Length: 62
Image: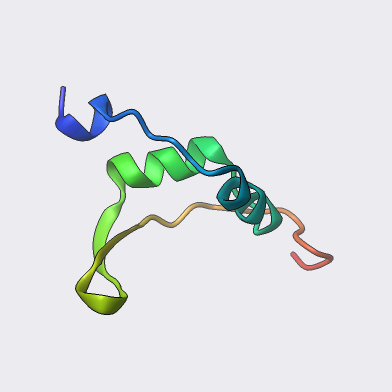
């Protein structure tokens, strides 16, 4: 088992609320952290990214 799968990932309630507004959820956030592709971020930080099939409406748009 890799280190990433052993991490206890905690998501701030405000962060989770904003993520849900954008059409994602806690399970997808944790999946990206554990299995996403490493990408560069601002201020010499690193981020993670992963593309999901959404195939539904969000704020009135498909």
